Image 1 (spheres, one colour):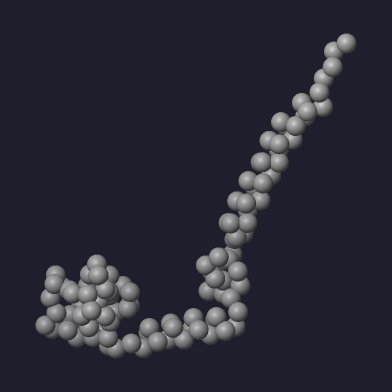
Image 2: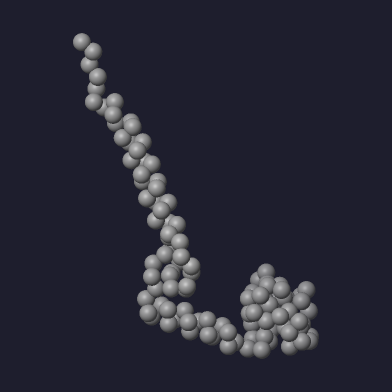
Length: 111
């Protein structure tokens, strides 16, 4: 008599389970569309009212700053993009500034 083990079904079932698990993981990481309105944290969870308030306050402080402190690796172009001020305006506000010799810790007027 020819005996077949019921374990022969185990491999296809395991393969299907792995495929389903991959789809679940990939689907949960993609977020599922929609625009970014700033109401989600970096991990995809909703921000609390307090977190939204702190985020808004940080943005307002950043926009109202009058100086920028140079960090290692900064260039005048990168600073202009970061503070949303044209490079020419930065050069006018800082006539003694040498864009090629920026030093970390140096203060630059931006308003």
